[in-house]
Image (cartoon, rainbow, N blue to C red; front, side, top):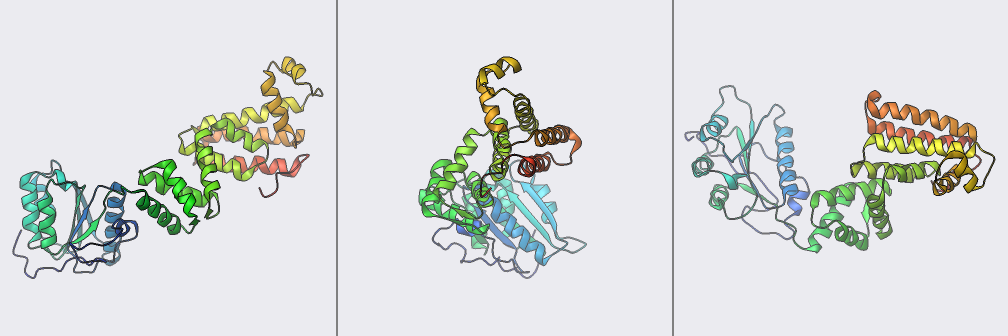
Length: 362
């Protein structure tokens, strides 16, 4: 793999390779430094899988900005034949830039590690090579060889301290344009734990659900809703005209894996039951339970949900629920969109035709 002439310079990075810096996770949370045309070698190393993925994605984006027609290769080191690696790293007859990412190099066989080490001593000027190591001592010599050859390093250590995870949450919220109070960030970390993907997803959802300003009450509401949400809790919020709460519940239910059809069925059942109760003159729960052959508790709940609705509005809502049933069973291109659209329509029908209006601020 030698004989390529002038040796390329290393990737630039916010710090010198092999140096130290506080809060090392930050380098993988924010986009990596732009990769110059002469960049050739990079090491992404550490136990935190999300940060490793982000570091690789940032390099990929930076290379694409400078080489629009870049040829991309991603190879898993475990079981990778040396010959296949050699083919990918061989000089091209047609020119153009290549980005080669070799993941899991801690699992690389001895011959493969030796081949990578030899390549690092004389890298191809038309290739950016990134080696990704999941941490630990195995094949650590390979990383040292890359650093010695001038490779830039993205460190992605496990965020083992609560303080680091709180800092991560605050950075995630800022990245999507929100603000979070210190007690809210602490509460979120306490509730979710050490999984950065879950922390990142929760931070983004909180900003979306609460308009960018997140306090401890918002975090408590978020997790209370996530823990309790079912198709029936979605239906309850829809029937009382709580637009914001309904949409929030739909998103939480979908995140928890509640099937679209179960949410649609619960909404349809709630609307139909409210219509049946509202259509009868009696207000006595026991009498209505006997007439409708329903348990008294369900009658009482339906009576509460029917307040503020007109018969005409409930009939329109039944029509929307029927459309939704077809949509989530394949008629709509996006079942997620169909659910949210139906919720908005039903809440709007209540507000426009009902005997009452949605609660203030919703």
